[in-house]
Image 1 (cartoon, rainbow over the protein chains, first blue to last red):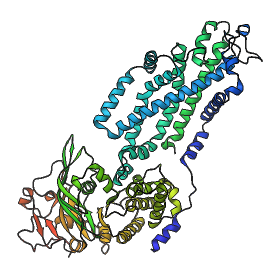
Image 2 (image 1 turned 45 degrees about the vertical axis):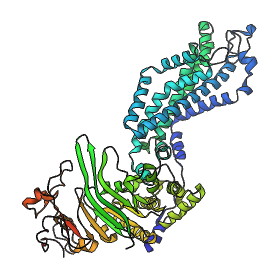
Image 3 (image 1 turned 90 degrees about the vertical axis):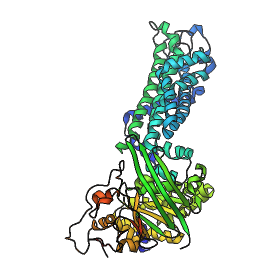
Image 4 (image 1 turned 180 degrees about the vertical axis):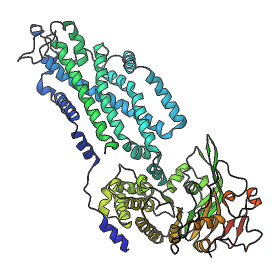
Amino acid sequence: MSDRTLSRKMIPATKKRSQALDVWKRLRKSNSAIAGLILIFIFLCLAVFAPLIADYENDALKMNIIERLQSPGADHWFGTDEMGRDIFARIVYGTRISLFVGVISVSIALTLGGTLGAIAGYYGGKIDNIIMRTLDVLLAIPTILLAITIVAALGASILNLMIAVGISNIPGFARVVRAAVLSIKDQEFIEAARAIGSRDHTIILKHVLPNSMAPIIVFATLKVASAIMATASLSFIGLGIQPPTPEWGSMLAGGRAYIRDNMYIVLYPGLAIVLTVLSLNLIGDGLRDALDPKLK
Amino acid sequence: MKGTVLKVENLAVRYVTEDGIVQAVNGIDISVEKGSTLGLVGETGAGKTTTALSVLRLIPDPPGEVVSGKIELDGKALMELPESKMEKIRGGLVSMIFQDPMTALNPVLKVGDQIAEAIKIHQQLSQDKALQKAREMLEMVGIPGARMNEYPHQFSGGMKQRVVIAIALSCSPKLLIADEPTTALDVTIQAQVLELMKELKEKMDMAMIMITHDLGVVAEVCDNVAIMYAGRIVEQGTLEEIFNNTKHPYTEGLFLSIPNIDDRKAELKPIRGLMSDPFNLPPGCSFCDRCDYAMDKCATEKPEKVHFSPDHFVECHLYPDNKEFQLKGGKG
């Protein structure tokens, strides 16, 4: 008994620290990641408080021919487009669509692709081969082309856009999750979990996936950026959000005829796309560094 | 003795790989009585861990494959049970302590949750009750209950091994398999952990299989010892019989490889050579290439079991004709 009482005294009083706090501390050191976070926070605020900033019906949708093609000024901060609609208001409401579609389509891809990847990686063998080879076929088709095909087949609407972008991202997520699962599943604590009688699905959900979160989070962040790009691209060619709904890609498409004299019509939506995608990429890169255990 | 907890008969396991077939375990018999400890001793690759994993039916398949054998745990024939029944038995009737506590715990879960997981699976308790029990288990292995909300990286190696022990014992198993539980720990912590395991084993009246290559650990905790070599048990007996009445040349070689504390200048006499290639075991005794007593027939014929007492047997050609044969450098 004596050595046990001794060992109790030897336990140092460690401070509780959570992993999320650790990651945040490292993330804070990266200026570019912070810049990205601030930018995305601004965009989020625009999306959430859009009704307080501008009137959807009157500013963003209603045609106002008298005020068409006005330059940026006190009345219209970013000017007006060819229909006399306030570009700032349209960008603010466009933020809602872009972020929403980006996040939802990535969630679709993450859920489906992640499940498939986890199953393929965990069970291996034939199951792995069947799932991954099927996804390889999908992967062989360029993402945007696949999305175009799906939207063309389903019809153009916000929901179908999200489904299309989501499905075309499934193979990528499946691969990332599978790789992460493969690196974890042979570790001893997985065997230990089996040795106490845990079932396969408990092991995958409770032991494998939480340990492979880091690459998945990074990949998902970067993919939201590319999903926003894909949404804008599809809308630009008329397969995504239909006018008059304000969407950055379709604003670009509508304004490109006036680019010579009124370049701000395409400048501001373009800037919005660039800044969102850039900020998400900065955050993704920062997270990659912050989550990398080798730097710990 | 109060009955047999584990009975393994003629167990043979092999791994089928692209390079050939590894005969990891070749027909072994083990039985463990209630409350007693069997030491499974042998060098790396002798098949100790494979034996243990086959009791839990956790041999990775493929490439592993149980060729033959009956395993009876607490009266249940394990080989015939469906996988769903096995899940109830793993961690419930039999549990296992792994070699390296650094990797046997999930780094992203709190230790309390990890202990509670086993309890929830086998005792159908609510989350709160399971956590309460987990706290008790943690205290039983000498860690303050308040630390159950910490993560494995906040514990030292010895502490982690205590947590692993707490998980293994949380459902009061009838049999505990400890796979080199002290190998990854330093010597002082080893002593603490062994002491703790011994104490808990007696408290919970469990049987235990202690897998190790450290004869010091064997002397400390075991009642019976089985010496494994190339997938066979070459000598088995009580602790006393193995240590003081060593019969097999391999067992003798193991003892001669230990530094002598009374004569620090004495040169160690290691066993020469390497263990035979498990892809290609010799037809006769697997040890004959390295044996100082090897005879002609050792290379061609498999040795039979020779009993010296009901518990003590040896598989060696030296004895069937001359039971009185004494090893040259052995003890006793």
